Image 1 (cartoon, chains in turn blue, cyan):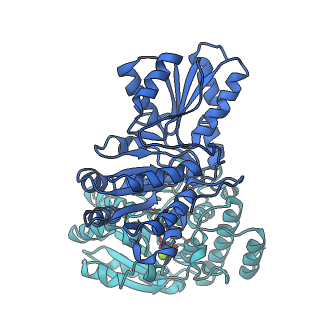
Image 2: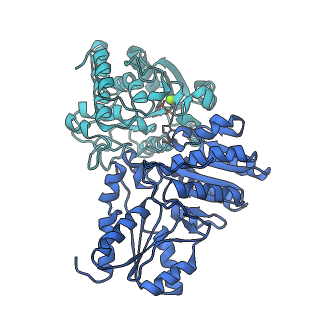
Image 3: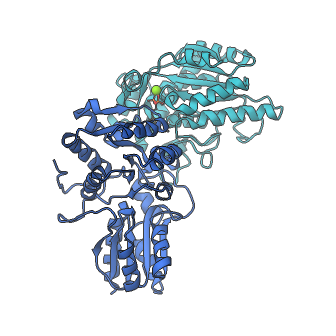
Length: 318
Length: 274
Ligand SMILES: Cc1ncc(C[n+]2csc(CCOP(=O)(O)OP(=O)(O)O)c2C)c(N)n1
Ligand SMILES: [Mg+2]
């Protein structure tokens, strides 16, 4: 089964649920755990088809992560889901000691990540998960941008032994990546070539980066758009090339500016091909309630803010 | 002093109306537990049990109220408005950008909120700390915390329970929403909890169990709790999720789904409100 392309909007968590259910039919070694959020994380799709390989662990995320490690040690491929805030936030220490350190074959799929969880407010808006997951040895970090990429990421992590964190969204977003799109672990996809500036985006911000590129094009500026889904491992080669060829980089993510994808990009650039990097994200503050779309605008993570940052970096007065 | 239970019932009914109205306008949020705990919290807040001053929300000797199952904050907000912490009109802005009423309790935004909650398991520990803080400073305020059966699946709750009993924290009272429901369904199906009261008792707590819709029983249990010496107290409140609205009652689907306009009208009709 493949996730069918529809013209409507689809949240990446929905594509996750569908893909997981499909994988369940293809592979008997896949086990799924959830912590009383299976309807929201969409692991309920898998549970309906393969109830014997699904365990609801209740509202007990730390125990869920520890259990996932134990299950994996017996030869199983384990997907463990909750809201990102709780799967990686509450259970961080269990993730570190029992998933990353023993290199357990556990895929932590955290939904409702970032500011776009919206109305639930600051307590539920994970804005630190990319940072805390990417600093863990052995942990890989992926943030798919649409339903198509989500299916490919989930299939890739299922096929590749070892720990992985997949960051997924609650909010419905357009399916905009092309039919021939191909995700690969450790590779950045260049969605649009450009010579004047590079915009590196991840997850929900990728489509806004493309819209910003359109706005810049109308001003005669050609922006290169990088989809950084694979935040760890990170595609150094493509980043260094972009830094050298465009000489300026803007990054954007619904995450703290500190420690996120932008920081990962800046680290690579600083070491290999120094050029100015402007990081857009949450500026050392918590979020608040509002609709996901409103909050993305409010915190300057959509096209106008991205193109504005690009213009500023290029020295164009606004 | 014995409260006027007829008057309390009217207050509870009107609070239910406010909860439903604010959630319909918000378009997201949690009616089930909010309606289920309305009678318990009404008795606590309007039955003369809480020593607070709405004109001075940060008064250092006030009793504290921690809503550890923070998702049911609509009922807390409705109560705080009726206690004049802020104008009732603010209720209609719940969960909207710029509102003083966040999706989960946050004291940076809302007067009368004592603890930022929303992540289950955390609030009860903070409540314990507040109660210990009172004792450490020779103050005599009490700490009340709302918790729930779903929340009791968090290991941290049991770490709190051990610590509170060990340190004999007897100015701490937990009010547990025991509605037998959580997000994924009935608690007995998702992850059976067994006898939660007995578990707390075995941890060394003073435990009472009441019908969470019998305000006189709740009032008496709150008075009993205050008398317990050397032990933290738990009141297991047997409630009906969605209490007061026939189509919501005991339906897990209403944990976190809001009524549309038509459902709101029907619900208000049933409550005799308009
Ligand atoms: C640590 C944590 N994990 C998960 C959630 C998501 N969540 C919100 S409410 C809830 C169910 C809790 O059960 P209960 O309080 O009994 O729900 P109710 O009776 O109000 O329906 C869950 C899992 C959360 N808020 N915090
Ligand atoms: Mg419950």
